[in-house]
Image 1: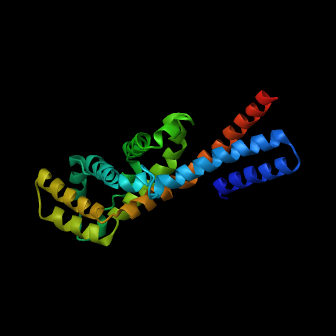
Image 2: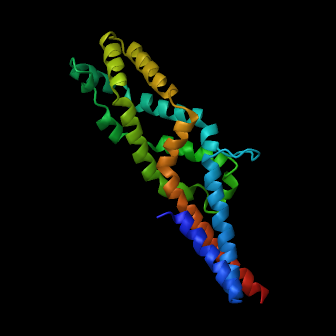
Length: 235
């Protein structure tokens, strides 16, 4: 169910019914609810899509380099520690697919990546609007789905045949930890460089857009309450 569409449709219907039946309280409630829901729906759309002439839109695509850097740091600082590399080297076989990073990825704390995304949104033109709905705390419900999807995305990247073959060949030709880590860093960076702004947008969109629909719902709810307040104050 599309929460944004349903919220806007209900609010618009309320406006029509309230106006047609001369129910001022319903008209005020629905009009303000439509205003709040529609504004938030447009804001969510502009978070992912760049709109010509509107500064600060398409922030996810504009900040895709920062997002890639966050993933890169997460992989290198938490996966490829000396302890983990020692384990890989001691267990490696001739099969490139023996290097299964999925268990490590599953146990990795993805909070830094989510925090980076929240900071990006907070520092964008949407930061002021976000503060109207509880600030960054309003994004907390997105953390779980975001981290789960990010883990799956990283697992897919590291599970590719190309990544596995390169990792195997590079590890097999090195014995020094620093040298190995440097080569792994190069492989990871090469894979991340294949990401385009649109791919990053789709990745983030898949993680959180459905949950951002609640911003539209709550925009309608709070807008409606403000509308009722305006009606009673005007009596």
